[in-house]
Image (cartoon, rainbow, N blue to C red; front, side, top):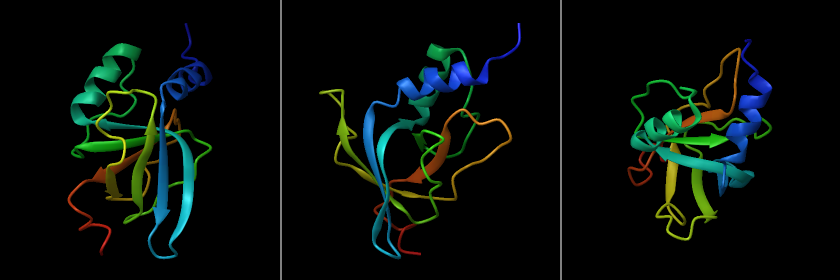
Length: 126
């Protein structure tokens, strides 16, 4: 049975239950505000087990931001904030991170994946 990437994309995008805001510090302007998910390394492992697909791969980044493919790519130093979460027990709402590198890309993408750093904005200050 062939792999249905469009079905996996729709399945994963349904799990993007946070509202995230990406701000570009150089301009300061909002680059994106909309559906997203913020996952720690542990969250990435659990999520991959739940959907049966290792879409994020192994990464040295402790945090990764997931956004739909329609969202613009983030740039190094962009500020990421979780402005709302559908989960009332969420501990990520109101926290901020900085993009470590440009949004990852590949030939077959399911969601946008961006490595993040929560080290007090040191990366964003570069």
